[in-house]
Amino acid sequence: MKLYYFSEMPHHEYPDEEGGKYPSLRLAFPNRFFDREKAASNYQRYLTEYELADRVGFDGLMINEHHSTPSCVNVGANMTAAVLGRTTSRAKLLILGNILPIEDNPVRMAEQIAMADLISGGRVLSGFVRGVGVESWWANSNPVHNRERFEECHDLIMKCWTEPGPFRWEGRHYHFRHVNPWCLPLQKPHPPIWIPGTASPETAVWAGQRGYTYVPFLVPFETARQLFEFYRQGAAEAGRTVTPDNLGFLICAVTADTTEKAREAGKHFVWRMGPTLRGPVEWFSPVGMRSRAGQQFALKARPRSLATMSYDELLAAHFIIAGTPDEVAEGFARVQRELGVGHLLLEAQESRMDHATTMRSIELMGAKVIPAIAKL
Amino acid sequence: MQPHEERIQVGGIAVHTWVGGQGDPLLVLHGAGGNRGWRMWMDRVAERYTVWAPTHPGFGASGSAEWMEGVDDLARFYLWFIEAARLGRPHLLGQSFGGWTAAEIATMSPGAIDRLVLAAAVGLKPEQGEILDVFYHSPQELRLLNVYDPKSIPEWEELFGRAPTPAELEIAERNREMTARLAWKPYMHNPRLAHFLPRVTNPTLVVWGREDKIVPVACGEQYRRAIPNATLTVLERCGHLIPIEQPEAFAKLVLDFLGGEVRR
Image (cartoon, rainbow over all chains, first blue to last red; front, top):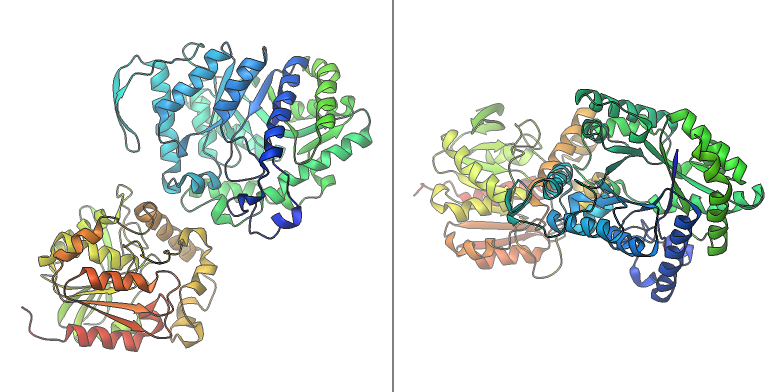
């Protein structure tokens, strides 16, 4: 099983009582609380942590993107991939991912991903996501068109990478009279495609039909198994065999020299389960964004919101794994036994987890956990 | 004619329509909240006019139209509806989102309609203030933002007095989706509409509630200024749902304006 290091690059640099005054930290929390100096030094810090993760042997570095929220100030996944393409040397760069429905120019996106792949020597894993509703608000992209735009944007990017230009694209949402990008990925014909999932059965089927690597995020094991079933259904329709390499899973994890220290550090993950996801349902899931099937599956699949779970409950359910290297290795092995995945993505820094704690966790993962996991 | 429901076929879409009353046809276009059925104000107006109250495609019990992209599509569709239902040259009344649609229809084909009533119509960018973002709020919040005083509304209990059934929730969701499809961006207005309004020389009544928290009264003034033969009436102690909030006053305004006079 391969391990991936991930930080949301949070900006938890304001008094929590201020954040609590607004209906949500996303969209509504005013950016006068954005601390420019702290942000500047945090980017250096977060990139340094990614670079250490590369050196100690993580198989990949996962990068994501969100907008209008202190929970993630990585506002340009391809920009981060390009930076890490120069400052790291061996780990895959897992962009998970570019938010397709809110993109107005898929050709430019195809070019940017290609450029990151070229700069990194062909290390990009190209994830595509639909985004949470907040991103649709941020971009003012009609949520009713979210799935259609996701698929059409994907189709155009793939055509950029697989068919010679120039060609014309006249779709429903995208219109380009002259497509001929002079920047193509180093990997032929294109970087591997990854797709995350939280609740949409259609996305799982769609990814399975195409053989893309499919990664549920922070869902109970049982939900992940159901989503993998949808994935297998799609794969079977297309006559594809599903191997562990097609499947991944994302959890939060931190290690330290003692159980106590690790458990203390792990508390920082609670922020991302509750406060950063607080807000009106209309903001996270605006009208039309989710299909009826997706809504029904979501209702069934996640009876309890993560926000209502205590730290101990989150640990018990393996949403968070925090312990000594031996303990987290055992936790990861459990995930592997439960789900049979080939990729484990670790959200390994959050909230106010400090640099020293984060660096030590990365070091210990490299020295003790990664070797133990490599056998799985 | 007792009010009854029909399905009128237009361009392959079955348009669910309430029809009732007697006299010249009055086409009534509902707001983003959907077709609320045969209401008290319609009963009054139906004493002298035949009310045709269709449910927009994509809303309620009407067929889908996922191909539509904007209110101009809906307006062209209703010009077709007028022919398909053989309404001749009906009076046209639209409320809120339906008011915007009515204004678009009037600019496209002023000769296809007789008199025009716009009640708290969206469609123009307010010179002052903003149109409330209805997608940003929950249906529960909107219900109260929509009206001035629920207690003064005779049909409040009937319309909102109990928890909606799953089927009603499904319809509400469908209505919101279709509204988003047509009016997400630019939000609830057409930047080009004002340029065409001077073409509408039909006698026009613009009605607003003084306490409208959804669409600023400024928009009513803008419609009045842009349409050559328009008058503006502002009702006191009234919010955005004018026909529901003040059914008697609204029906009287409409009847006085339409006048029952001989059609030109």
